[in-house]
Amino acid sequence: MKQDPSGNPASGQRPEGGARRQILDAAAALLRQGYDATTTREIAARVGIKAGSIYHHYPSKEAIVSAVVNEGVRVVHEAVTGALAALGSSASPRERMQAAIKAHLLSSLEHSAYTSASIRAFAFLPAAVQEDCRVERRRYEEIWRGLVTEAAAAGLLAPGVSQDAVRLLLLGAVNWAGEWYRPERMSIDEIARDFAASILR
Amino acid sequence: MKQDPSGNPASGQRPEGGARRQILDAAAALLRQGYDATTTREIAARVGIKAGSIYHHYPSKEAIVSAVVNEGVRVVHEAVTGALAALGSSASPRERMQAAIKAHLLSSLEHSAYTSASIRAFAFLPAAVQEDCRVERRRYEEIWRGLVTEAAAAGLLAPGVSQDAVRLLLLGAVNWAGEWYRPERMSIDEIARDFAASILR
DNA sequence: ATTGATACCTAACTACCGATAGGGAGCCGC
DNA sequence: GCGGCTCCCTATCGGTAGTTAGGTATCAAT
Image (cartoon, rainbow over all chains, first blue to last red; front, side, top):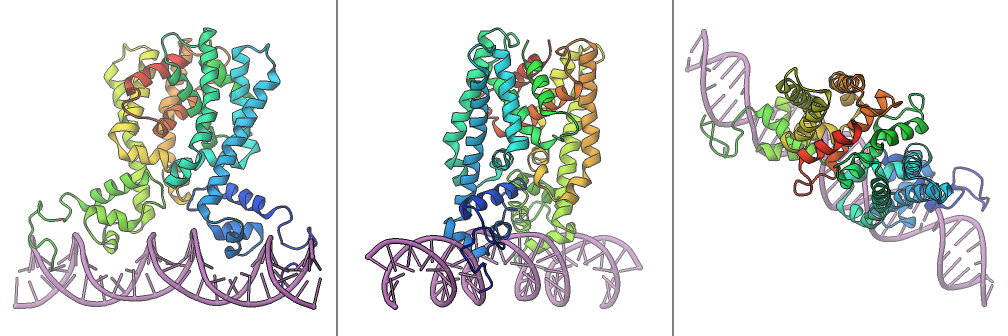
């Protein structure tokens, strides 16, 4: 065999850490270019194994993609929750909103290929995969529902507009950011500040 | 032969109007589900011809998709330009902004499968196709740059925020609307009104 | 009547996809 | 040292993609 002959965990081309994790990492990186562009062969190549070997770790391509997307939502959920918790209970609704926007943008644009993939590719995933992460996405959505309600209670929203509209405006804007964001153009901090300032008064 | 035996333009399964137009229509409808989901065979089936016959009208799948996306941008460009022209010169920057938002949403959500396709699928198109419609998209973007500048001059924007941020916030929100819009949920008119009211003061 | 263009078909090619079958090497507990 | 487990391999399957070659029917103009 030409493969890694020893149990040495750090030699050759073979996966070092958990192979399952490496497969997800590769899939997440590819998913940003679309579901069909994410081939099991390319995933295997990036991990350093052969195509068929994927199926020792996961039963299907859909299972891999489902895991990636779910983790992507989980990561951004934790990022936003963590950022809000770090603010403490004395923070104003405006500060909380801006912190949430920044955390979401950081997760989807810089920190997590999983989050990036789950936002960009979601609409074109097989229906079964979309169904798999509906609950997780719904749960994340609730955070934003709460933030908008807080802002409304504090009188920070434009008069007469529905909270649904504000939430959808905001989530649309941050989710679309992956289509135009370039680090040298505008910092994530600036984007979060201007987005928050634009919709709050 | 089992095909349309006469020159009768309205009989059988054969394309009635221009076949080129029908091919684009079919491609536009399919493109909303993604580039790879848009197969030449399915396009042909919807037009009522066989797969190979596509290539009598277009040299490649990329050429078809490129034409669809370009037309999609052209359509929304005309829709917004038309809506602004219909307002007349006495309209306020706020009215103009709201009308532009409504026209964009109407085009992408109701009127044009071309526009819908060009927004949703663009990010996953082959690089060559993206390059083909860069100019057209840039041209459309200029409308929004102008609208935001007008609003800023009228003092309608939040103080201290960059015009780029406002434009990207707004375009992101309207482009993302295709991911959640349901006619029974909120009317396009309401969406346009609330979006405009949220970012203008 | 012949030509040439137009529009479409049949059949096939190559390439690549997700997935499976079966085998082999190392390792662990007994 | 022997079974059994894990991990990965090779080889291949059936399916489908974009595309092409070459043939056929129709029709307008010569």
